[in-house]
Amino acid sequence: MGIYNAKKELYITKRNELLKNIKKYENIYSVGIDAEYIIGSGREFNLEKQDLVNYIIKKYINPFLKNNINVFMIFSGKQIKYYEDLKSYRVNDKLKWQKNIFKAYQNQNNDIIKKNILNYIWTKVSDYINAYPPSCNNPIYDLYTAIFIYNEPEKILNKTNYISYMRKLGNYIWKTSDSMYKLYDYFLIEKNDINLDIIPRDVLWELSYNHWINNMTSKRLSDHIDYVKKYLKNYIPIINSPYDGDDQLVTMVNLGIINAIVSCDSDFFAFKSNIVILDVCDKTNSIEFVKLDDMYKNFENNGYTYDMVRTAMIISSADYNPEFYKYKIPFNISLKTCKKLNNNSYFEIFKYFCKKYKISYDHNVAKEISNAYTVSTKKSDIIDSVNVVINAITDYVGNYNEDNFFHKIYVKLLLLLDIINTSNNEYIKKIKIN
Image (cartoon, rainbow, N blue to C red):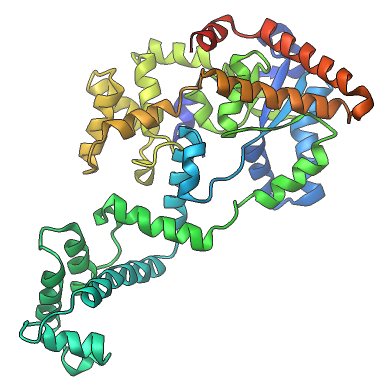
């Protein structure tokens, strides 16, 4: 989804170029296609199966191949389903997964959400009462027997005494300062409409996660993704990222395997993605693209430092920032705030927006979100990323049997040497250090 309302500012240095010229003028010899985004764009036209495959080939693949530009298609790794799985995933995957869970829950009809919250609160009440029933001389004993023993609340509750009795019940379970009591009072006693802002984060997470487990068993595009993979695997190299696909694409840019990313996902502007190709026109044989060096230079000329721009992108991220995503903070607001406060500190700006939206500031969470936009330089991660590229190419070149097993190894070694020799030297140095 990218960065909220950022096109005007981020696309200001957008350019057009004929595909036949991009090698000469922009040094683009190889591109990586953001599979999920491109498939999603085809689904917006209600395309599926072979029609979807043909659309991708015609619009996004053939124009490059006809101009002798290498094309890779990158897919994200296995979808996270359970919280227990997080320990084997990187921070980017975790943050995007958490955001998807919150989003899936809050995209429901308000009546459904309210019913869900009421059930959640009442379950807490019932669990406590069943574990610690009041004594016969307790002021709520008659209410307890009517509701929890005989299941006949109407025998004691009416319009006149409902609020006083229910508050006594709440006070039996929680202190009035407790966040759960406030929810209980707000929704069960006062019977207010839905306001997710007053729900503590841990409660909202529990509600959202339970909804995800029970209802969101598969990714929205999973069937279409599997179909596209199947029919394109012999057409171009298909890369199954070991982690989030965004990470894989940016790593491939830094290693020099690809020179540009084909996607309209503005999150790539916050990574060091070199060139982001926004559109391919098969009719004019041209592309629309943004060169990130040009973009940052334009911001600098207007008084915005690199750190300000990057901070504003992270604050306004729709994918990797589960703290602020529901507020949909426009990029220009985040950017102007950085300039207004005259502050290059990401953490200070993060604190500012936490205070604005009455969110408890957690330095570790802020650091984790910032790190989501930093490509890993760990040797193990780079090895994983390179390995999937080499496997994709060898699989694309052809299937090998046991008789030419050593030929397959030879091809892999040649590819690995080529990647190392053409990689960004500074990036390779960082890998060696780490």
